[in-house]
Image (tube, rainbow, N blue to C red):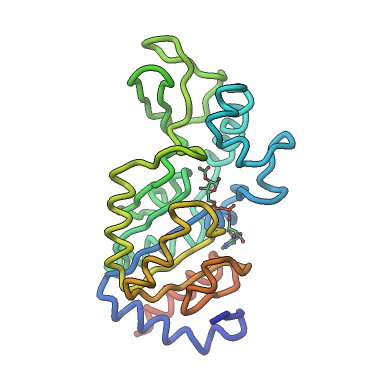
Length: 253
Ligand code: OAD
């Protein structure tokens, strides 16, 4: 059911009831839209472009093998934005939900670390983290706290190029994170999907799997996406406006 802002008041009590009845077994699946209000550009459309290239071309092992400098320029640009970014009311509402014992986990496609910054403890990063790098040649991995200055960075062990420790198109996702995500998705009573286009696998499949296993799916996204059809409630609004409303209404009971 598609819900607009003016209709939200009618369904809010039912959403609240479903979340409370789930006894803590609520999972959130998040995408780039949740971080938009923190100033981080999403991936599709004009805002996702960098030097005329689509994110699908940039988050891509082939492009990296041909032009590592270009891909690193894009990641450096995103690192600089993310470094300055703060969690917005949508991130904070999910942290509050976990604090109250009502949210089991956040499965995120985002690599920005803002859920952890907001205070969520159980965060599963299925696309890796922009704050880690790994060598394309040896086992070297490293954690960073600030945007890198020199690109492309080099491995201190073998002098080969380092790459961001994120998942690119066509690459295998971190096994443990995917295993955990499937477990959470299959067992969730409520799945809150926030700010994802629902186009990138395997996360795009999660709402359908959750619904098939009996979960109530709630989607929060200003536009209609493939998730809207699966959702019991598809709220066509911004996450930073809706999530705090849901959480504060939970406070009232
Ligand atoms: P997208 O950029 O594809 O989609 C962002 C979604 O957020 C869109 O559906 C927007 O309508 C929605 N949105 C925008 N503003 C919003 C707001 N304020 N509140 C709620 N929703 C909002 O991002 P993802 O679906 O996360 O992967 O993309 C999935 C993956 O594709 C990314 O993790 C990235 C990308 O390529 C890699 O880099 C591997």
